[in-house]
Image 1 (cartoon, helix red, strand yellow):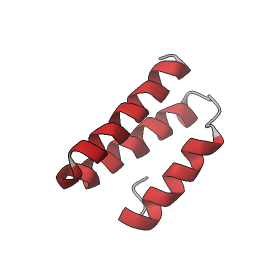
Image 2: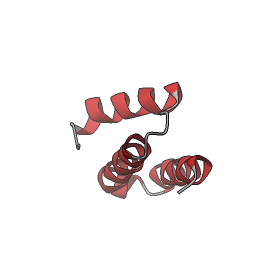
Image 3: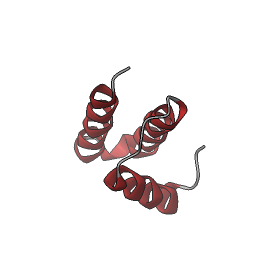
Image 4: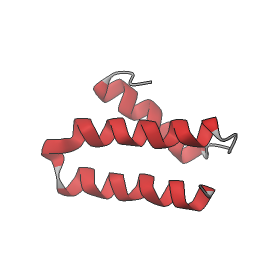
Length: 64
């Protein structure tokens, strides 16, 4: 999958976290999965997504 596609899916999940805060744990897990997919394909993880991942880990715990 193309880098931009994965990045777009992550940003869509973030929008859903804002609109559906009752599902934020599940959505945070999905964000972690998308970032892991970037790493697994050898694509670089942008700094903003690395920071986001760290913030989510602090809030919800490590999900890798």
